Image 1 (tube, helix red, strand yellow):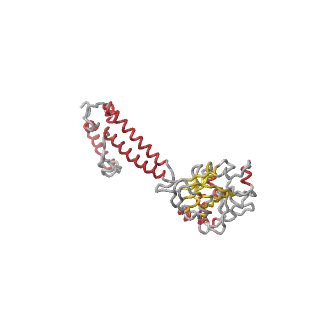
Image 2 (image 1 turned 45 degrees about the vertical axis):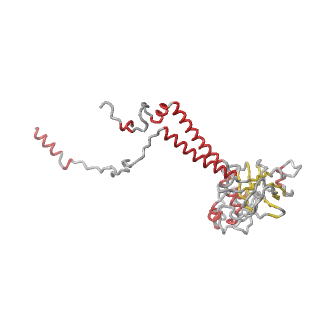
Amino acid sequence: MDSHAAGSSSGGSGDGGAQPRRSSRKPTYSKFTQQELPACKPILTPKWVISVFVLVGVIFVSIGIVSLRASRQVVEIVDRYDDACVPAGVTDKLAYIRNDSIPKSCTRNLTITKDMKQPIFVYYQLDDFYQNHRRYVKSRNDAQLRDKSKASDFTNCDPEAKTVDGKPIVPCGLIAWSLFNDTYKLIHNNVTLRVEKKDISWKSDRDHKFGSDVFPTNFQKGPLKGGKTLDPSIPLSKQEDLIVWMRTAALPTFRKLYGRIYVDLKENDTITVQLDNNYNTYSFGGKKKLVLSTATWLGGKNDFLGLAYLTVGGLCFFLAFAFTLLYLIKPRLVIFYFSQVATTSRKMGDNSYLSWNRPPSGR
């Protein structure tokens, strides 16, 4: 019986009972897959941490001082005129701005506080105007702006999509409809300054977002007239005021470039501004301002970047000072914090205390 069982066992282990060999999923050996590439394993010590904080603080404070100095070199003249240009005795500002029979011309005198080198940028600033409102931002049709054949496509343009008799409006939508329409005429020493409007918009917008063969059609002929009207003989790619306006702002207070003047202005010079106060900001409690500004290598006046660098640099100096003071007062506590081991009498940076270099306990 034993030999029979042995024979049966031997027969069962023949070719007929062999299991198919499974393909190995083990990846091909390499130092990368096995994470055996050379690596830097720095050990934090108080001296290293304090040195790094000091170095970062020096770099950030230096950049902050340079950025803040560049921002402070920008000369800005800001004049709010929405209230000042309302005629005396007018109590209902909304009725005033909507009445076309009332002249909207206004004269403002600006005094130059510091020398301003050309080019001088002319901006208009609107406060409390929410161009980032979801319905407002979506009320446009980019295909219509680019392609002449899509002139009748006014998808997403409601409520300014077509005229009363059903004709499509080009460009359609609330953004184009609300185009800023105040105008400025700057006079210096009885000479009218030329406000250059060429290249005030992004080149990518002119070349790719607004077609050179797309012309305004039925614009501002909808149920309610909005802002500025457009010249129907000029293609949209040349209507730079429109292109600038169509790049919506992310915040409720924003500036948009109106033009540039290439004249140097001296301190105490007077600029006379003859403007047309046409744009309605009274219905939503907004504000309008005219801004004259120079620029530096960093751009316009903005102290935020410099202050941010100074804040981070100052924080690094504070941490470096705090760690230094703590190290001098309680060195064992600082060493324990950085080494994360109970024994603090060992030499800092000794690799023999690392867990993988210590002998296993109990062996």
